[in-house]
Image 1 (cartoon, one colour):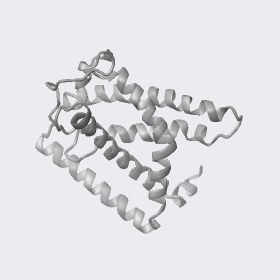
Image 2: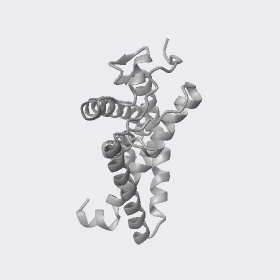
Image 3: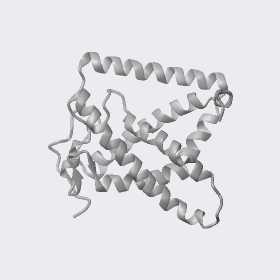
Image 4: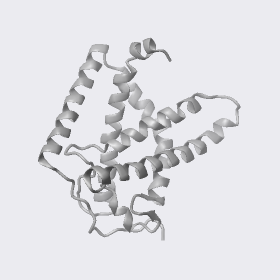
Length: 202
C-alpha cells in the first residue's frame, strides 16, 4: 500500500485510535477478571493513571500486521476450516512474546510490571507469562480478528475525515497529559500481589 493510499484512508489515525480502543478494552478485561472472576478487589491494571493497558494495543496492532493477509485469503477451500486454529496459535505466540518482552521493559523502566500476580498461576515463567493467560490470548485473538476488529473498523469508518482527525487529536492530548502527570507524580499502580488466587490449571 502506497503512502498516498494510507493518507487517503486515514490509516494512521485509525490505527492510533484502534490502539487506544484496545488498550481500554484490555484494561476492562483485566479489571473484570480481578473483580468478578478472581474476586481480588479493584486494582488499576494499567501502567498509567487512566483506564488503559497499552500492551493490549501493541498486541492488537501486531495481530493485524501478522494475520490480516491470512484473514483475507479465501483459497484453498480447506483454509476456511484451518484458519481459526492458525489464528489461535499465532495470536497466542505473538501475545505471549509481547507480554514477556514488555515485562522486562517495564521492570527496567519502572521496577515492576502489573501482572506479577502470575506467580500464583501453576504454570508460569518468572511471573512474566503464564499458560492460562496465553491460552486466553489465543482465544481472544480469534474473537479479535473475526468480531472485534471488524466492529472497530466500522466505528472508525463512520466519522468524517475532519471529525476523525479531531477525535485522534483529543485522544493524543489525553494520553500525553496522562503520561506526563504519571511521571511527575511518580504514580505506580497498586498490584494485587497479596490477593488470593483461584488456580485455572490444577
